[in-house]
Image (cartoon, rainbow over all chains, first blue to last red):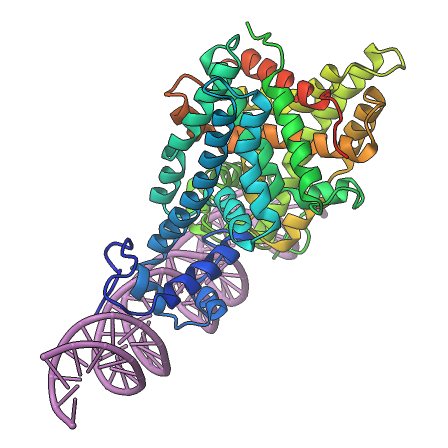
Length: 225
Length: 225
DNA sequence: GCTAAATTCAAACGCCCGTTTAAGTCAATG
DNA sequence: CATTGACTTAAACGGGCGTTTGAATTTAGC
């Protein structure tokens, strides 16, 4: 009488069509990108997905578990893309250290690229930005603990910036993430501020802008203490 | 039988003690900094404030109106501090253009400083970060439209960076706000990432770090197109 | 010290929430 | 072709929500 109620990790299980789960995840991603977790009701969500109200509890177990499943799906996809670009940059450097600019590109390009092409990961990033302040404690802790893939970037940056103490590399990587977040959270303010001059319309231009800014910040002279 | 129910703009009105309104605002600021608007109930809020459940509706008219009043109180305070620092920097430049670094300091110092001293504005910043994804549409639009005080910084930066096109100044100012936001929203991730190495403990060190990073980003060479 | 307004209070209102239930549908299996 | 198990469905559940009410209480003016 129940499928993925306890743990939502089965991918094909027995043979029931996989459709409904994906439909729910897609609708949830879209809505959670527009409003916060608490502000989206299951009635609204299931109606948008075109499924029955009980479907979420049947397939995921609870609203909380749906959020966690959603986070998992997106994180895997995004981190895989980032890791691939970083690996390619390292191979290009022939075992040496890639330039800061290329490490930065590997960090920011996937998220920006997805924002322009698929709606999928664009929404994921916005959703993550919101989820930090809302939702079940378990999901928020997962977001904070899931830093393993960032460690690879911290390591690579530390090698490329050997004059910086380790903790400064962490701080600047943290700021770099903040710059990325500003692409998903406050674009309306930027559009208003610039009188419509600045918009998310040209992928390459936006990417170049972000990479320039973040690279310059990472390479800034170290003056603290 | 009613006081500020329709519009919550009266400051002293007739003579009822001002205490309750302030107590509610303080409690709300604290809670909205921890959780999102939707996730905080009036029962929880009024209990934390030590007032009756109906007090919010009596003094502010509704939960939505409380959020807007709260935003107003904090925005005025923060913008006033920023404007004062910018004015002082401009006076120091003797009618000329202050260096980028000093403009940046005027932009970021108030928020950082308040984060360390009073609890008041520290919470306000966190609350604003959350409010963008939640709460009544009216409040969110207000946050996006309230960019007047940022225009002053955009203008000052454009003068200090005459080689940049106007829209690029807007973009980089936008990124600077993103870096600031990262101080309120994702600190837990930074602490985990750095193994506890990075923390919000030393005001001057944090401020210097942010100013260095943002200044370098603003002064980065312009390569787009 | 009385009056009238301002504020507080406990109780209730109706609504929508996440979740559960139990009957119903449908495809695959033996 | 009956049976089984996965899935869908409509309906209901208890509970917490924002808000309203009307009486009790406090405060200020004459």
